[in-house]
Length: 310
Image (cartoon, rainbow, N blue to C red; front, side, top):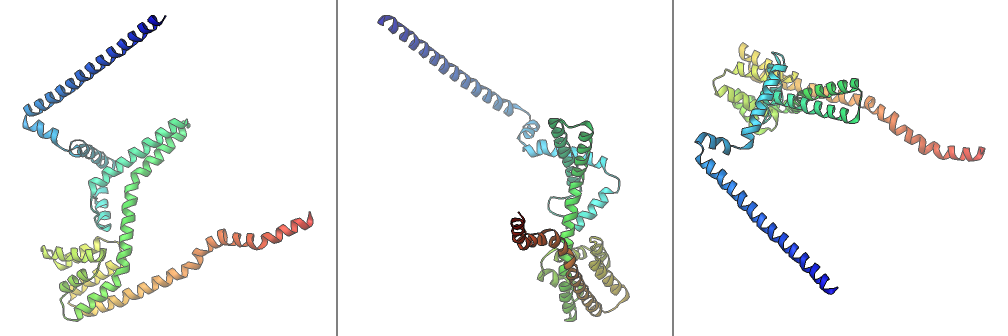
């Protein structure tokens, strides 16, 4: 009996040892095969022509992402109208031409957002078993929303930038007026304002100076600065500068009038915002604050009355 157990244990040990030996041999063979394939790939790469070698060694973004972005831009150009490119360029100028944003990238982002949101909505409708009408409506709405999303982001960036410019314009014109009345020329005064201030308005003044240094006339540069913005105060200032330059009116007087007008408008905007506060606070007061006051004040009385009558 004991001999049979010994025979079984010996056979099992031999079986385990054989399995381990075969596994080690197979692992070594697979490692040698993998090393051989790697060496073959390296030899093939060395023997390949220079063009193919450069193509393989290019980054993933240049080999795959750049052609994909080009196709998205092409699809976006076919989807938009003829004047959309000009409109996007104007919106980019209003937003200050953010880094990494140009017309081709905006068009590609529109198509990409449309495909992603539309595809996710379609997948969700199929997975949740929605009706065909709901599927078509939801997919169309989300795809249209994705197509309009870059436009909304660009419009929001432009609105924030112009709000900063409107807030800084009266102080900048005051500094410009003081500089011109102190004896500086208009270009030198603009340079002083661009150096002493920060923000998008200083960037616009610096761009005006760069354009004049590149050979553009002062009138054309001022008109271009007005066209890059939808801010009424900045357009009024540019128009006044153009008229003063064409008619030969002293710039100091014109700037003094513009400064007073800008400050009056800023005061009027502050008074208007203050007058809107009671109307704006009415909604949270009626919907949120007054119900809480009623609960706190009338709650104990209501509980006592319920106990009394019960």
